[in-house]
Length: 118
Length: 110
Image 1 (cartoon, each protein chain N blue to C red):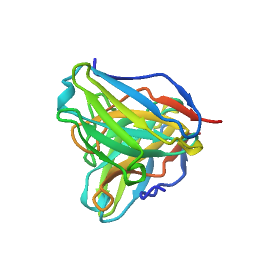
Image 2 (image 1 turned 90 degrees about the horizontal axis):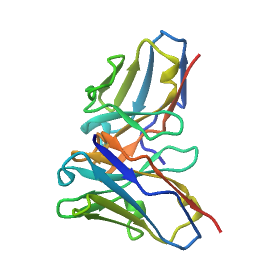
Image 3 (image 1 turned 30 degrees about the horizontal axis):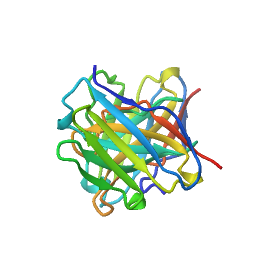
């Protein structure tokens, strides 16, 4: 069964960093892109960026440039998303999602709640 | 701030049909495929429609998609109470070099 399993909820203080993991199973990890999308409480979906696990090339939304890093570990079929200098408005559910390229996210992780609070 | 505009809410009775619009521009919908996602309360989004009008395996044919110019439409027929959810359109924006999503539409089945 094709799945993306994400790490558990996090609580962080402003200025800290958080790393969320996304482990793929049931398909060839290196053949699909992994995107990160976040959703603040009661709000819509916001695209953060994408990584191609085969080679590790990345593209980030301008809003997150300099503050986000996405990496992949092909030995464990896991993608990581690190967000630095956290602010209260980074409080959101963070999802990883699979796509053959861009758009058409056909498999989503269960989401990871990140709460930023002093 | 979403660059794709959707109505905040739509509603209809069970068994009826509803459409949800998604309005964009030439840099996104006008020149790229549109996807649609359904997000049930407390769950991750699910892909309903891809490449404007194609349904992934397992998605009911009660869901349909279309695109004309810089707008796209999701149609749902034979409404069921289990269809109540938030719906989002999404596409690539060539000017922003980013995936963009619609503002979201809450469907209520009365």
